[in-house]
Length: 338
Image (cartoon, rainbow, N blue to C red; front, side):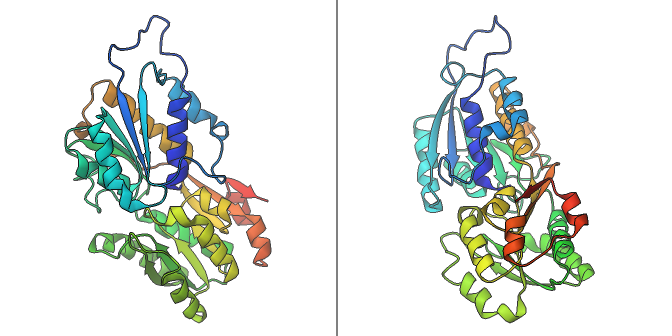
């Protein structure tokens, strides 16, 4: 899933909570203030309505918090400019807030650098251990915990397998991700390379660092190597979710079948997506908020990884690319966009 949707759903659901657990429950004398730090915008036309994931709304209503009565929310949006996140995190600390809910790896890192005492709950953060956000998933340590966005290196191989199954003629895949190539990703790349060899695929890596745009060098580089690339795999990081439509448009223009890490990529126009479900990721993030408000310490709450994933196919894009989806692939889909 993408960061934008998970953040939007968590924020909206916290704003739409129903009555407290029991009729006798009384609001606390001090209403906890939760700072919401988010790399994108409050909403966008591509984001689904909260009504599309009723299980999430039901789960959070069961927690019993009413905004303005049991919690107060302070929002800070970077509007896609990741360089603003450190200053926004510092603003939340100065308010002050009693907790920070951080969307994505860069928001979480900014919050971590801003405070060592205020509890931080992150959601949709890619590779929290590799990026130094937490010491380990089982023992995060310090004042931070939450829900990772990736389900482990094996998911990378699963996406490649789905791409190959959907488009059997694919043989050369560009791996596009919003992060710098670092030693912390060696294990993931090894799994990905191993899966690629089994599938008869050759991989090329294109990493976009924070502050760069895809049009600066990535898209021109892929275009220049068009004879060696016939598909795209869009990976994780806090850069790519801000450019889903741009990536989808480029892929369609270059006639490149593309698979993304969350449903929003398929919605934006990519051929396929496979990643964590929005409802489950947001529901678990809200559960962390509840536990900490009830007195738990972040250091004692292991970081959770997604356990539920959804496979989405955009048939409009398939038609535009002149592709026919194999029946076996359509059967696996959780959602088909027609």
